[in-house]
Image 1 (cartoon, helix red, strand yellow):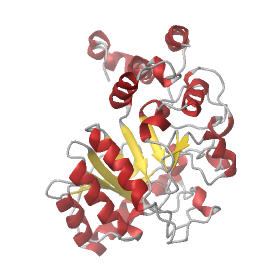
Image 2 (image 1 turned 90 degrees about the vertical axis):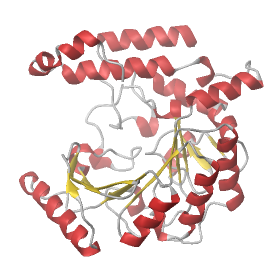
Image 3 (image 1 turned 180 degrees about the vertical axis):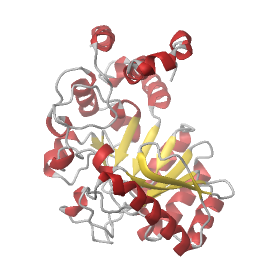
Length: 346
């Protein structure tokens, strides 16, 4: 994030006034608006070369499920009410390899995360898929998140040797416990977990989590943490009513402008919180990589229409209406910035 030097010099002063978060948000928004181009909304008049160049420059994040299965039914996850217990639901090999090969041809140097609403380590297929990706994407950042139930020291070492760049272990406690107790409970849970697996770790500043630890590896960055579900969670596209915003969202969403979020079926969604197997969210499917290339989905009419809905500072539709994920503070200057960008592009 590019921050004005004058502001950075006086940031402590603005923090005392309680304005630092709003100003930081404005600079984040400024950076985001600077990445938006006309092909995000309509690419019909662009040449094949222009489309390829735009796609290569804008795609930064991919999240993909290698299979559907999860061994848990957490109350704060849609899996509590949508069945994800069938281990035979696996992304087709040709579909996965086609996606990776397409990224290899464009020398993709962004980030690929091998998880969504599944538990990636539950099936050994994850190792073959990660290995294939690493061999063909030497510049990409590869990582995954796990609930930790299948983690062993040997598995961490195996992923490290395969060239995985980061691995997150997200652990869960009774998040409804009194707030003055929940952080201590998170700390104890993490330390008991580490002791059980025989792993060393250093405590880190929790930041937005209840507890956070760094597990040293040869090259792979491993973080163990307990997320702050009550304080920082979101409603997962309207599916979790207890975690929705109190007022409708007006903040733009940048996820579909730089990312593709792919279910095991090949369905592509605009955000990590949405999925194709929830009826109320199916209208937000941007395409399917069983039928089209990543580039075609990224530049599809459906993708452009979704971005048009999400770029403005007006109330968001459908599953995005009460979403609190990655918000921008929308003040007068932010509105002016967005309006100017929209006027120049749409």
